Length: 476
View 1: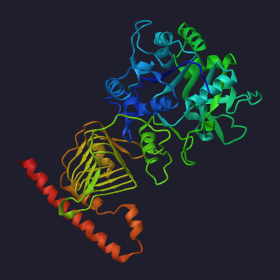
View 2 (view 1 turned 90 degrees about the vertical axis):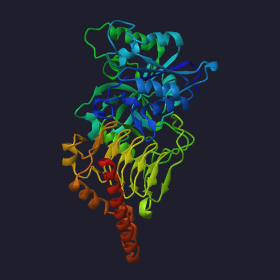
View 3 (view 1 turned 120 degrees about the vertical axis):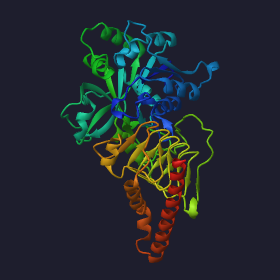
View 4 (view 1 turned 180 degrees about the vertical axis):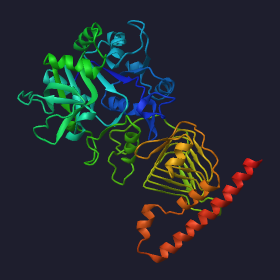
């Protein structure tokens, strides 16, 4: 185990344009994810690794991120531990952060104050588990001055990542450590690995540096007139050219109680589609990423919300959730939820249908409303009888974002218009369709089929009653 002094720097200033509209009002690392914030994964990994001196460099729309860190990540100051949110301060010139490398350069006073031997630099917008102590030990044993964490990816995805090519002729004697021969940003092709010709090593955006070497590299980069001020584009190639950069193969990282299915899981949630897919990875009976690993927990702010509950709605309609994650405070009152992730304090009303969707805090789905393949940000209220994700053309006409793959996204508090008669008819037809899991269960059982048909009819009748009540409220 390493006994050197370690400072961890979390790069959390990302704007996250490709995650719009979820980043319209918050920084990318502050975007909620399955009841957590994206930054919680990086901070939890560092804390579980035994590193408790952490600075988080923020910039873009950072209020909710700063507040989350200050309210959630409190360390024992008596032991000299801290998680400190540090905004851009223009300490070295009159510019804000110009890139990831410039963010650290402008914050070098933090390194000076901590006097670490090793600096661990991590991104704040990936979903994964990783023991950074194993990477630091690997870095020290290999004699590297800079170490880059890399995850194995299929060759056809090379044009989507920073690609690490290794010199296999150099034997470091350290498992998972190889000397980097080239670091190429999103090439059209790259050679496969010697032990896996169909794979390559992609940079995870996590680095370990000898402190003095990092300071020297940042100083030299800042003095250049031609630089992107970026860790991947400028700082790592600097070490590669000097023969001082090594790769750490993430597949060698061992997390306690990891399952074979979720071992070495890592996902960059930089786009709406990848954000959605990462949520879908959580909800199968044997999840691709397991949130229930008690030996390596993901920490977040504790909630005062009451336990979730599933209750009968109007006309005794049954509240049900299938293959879903449901957070505290959720109430499913006579509606049906399937293949979805519901965050704190979501309400699903009588006869409503929510399927293949992600609902963030305090979303309300009214009676008889239907939500399919959608992401609804905080405080969205879907009126009774409305539809989201059922008709992409209708969604676009109402100003909702719809991805090329057909995911409908609503921003924080975005208003959903009260449905007209045509839309309410569309919702009624959509609500009559049973969840796939139930269809499979009753396929060979006529009596179950008849019973569930009655359940659906009952829910639709209840929905119509609720809709009349909602209309009366509007008229008043």
